[in-house]
Length: 213
Length: 213
DNA sequence: AAATTAACCATACAAATGTATGGTATTATT
DNA sequence: AATAATACCATACATTTGTATGGTTAATTT
Image 1: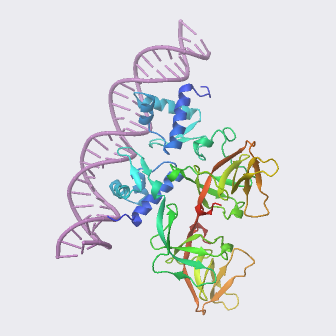
Image 2: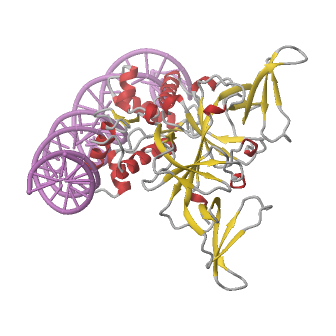
Image 3: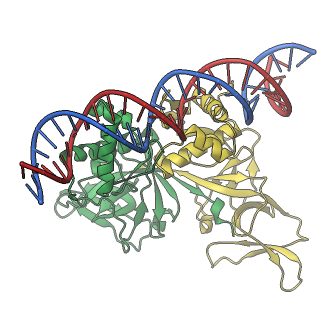
């Protein structure tokens, strides 16, 4: 058996990914069969068996809608960003990244917002600490002074956003500031490719319950 | 029928949210019944029906694991803020709410808890800043290491709580610590009268939306 | 030429799932 | 005091779901 995926299997896998990201839950065999025009669920099941054999998915037997993706499924972010960041590995958590965030798999988040759990203390200059949950709206145009989540050189950062005219080149540029004056502003010229705004932080929540001694 | 959610319904809703975020798929009736110790799926179903009636979820009939969270408008639910904690000044709890805030549903808000808005920056050694909303539970016995709201000499403080034996007198005493080591611990002997624990801080919420420049 | 694989189909079955109805006890509301 | 809402239970039922088996056709590999 070849380890390579066939055209049909690719379509099935794509549908799985698309459903999980857009609707939040994986489809049932019947739903997939209907979508592809199959008259039989067993057909879909064979494709899934093949995908599992090749290591692309993992099925939990007997349970409905229990197909797990063995890809970067556990950390996924809304579609538009995938593909623009480092191919295949959107938002990899680098051990020595200045700021790291963990993207939970959010089932259809309200108001098109999603949650990020902050990891590491390097964001504390923005009064955000490890374990905090930030609420991010990806569909807001960031205004000056707002805190944004951005991808910069394959690492995720949470900084205060400023857009202004460069004094030297008169070009528009983006500045990412820290609350802590010891950190120098990060300046992004328009030409810089490895930069993408993920969304605007509209709220922070911190649970205290686990912190008992 | 009240539009407010009951304690049991909130537990169900929380479980739904938690499952959708952590596992990716909503649970089945059987899974929920097992989790809550119900002997019957119908019980869960009734709670879901109530939640749907109140607009918190949307069920797609006949389909498994097909509970959708309709948190578009319910993601933030209005809660009254009943007072302010201002460093140095007495804690004032007003009979009528001074304000309301849209608290995200991810925030755990037990029935007996209340909200206080923090004023002033002097609590920042506990990572709490001016404008933050603290969720306070007055009916919890504070455990060592937890952050509590207390009244001390007619002033409200938010500090980390420790109860231990005095090394000199062998009496039980309470220590209120700051995160910042520059602040010396506040030691309260049992005899001290002007001290009262208001409650345990179980969560913090901070809204970012007004902070745009 | 023979064997294998891929991609479908039909039928069948047990378990899981959502649903429906009727009942009980407790609490809150009128 | 009567009514409604809440929170459970038991039992029953149709549908859905995942699974299993056997068969067909076409393309590919041996």
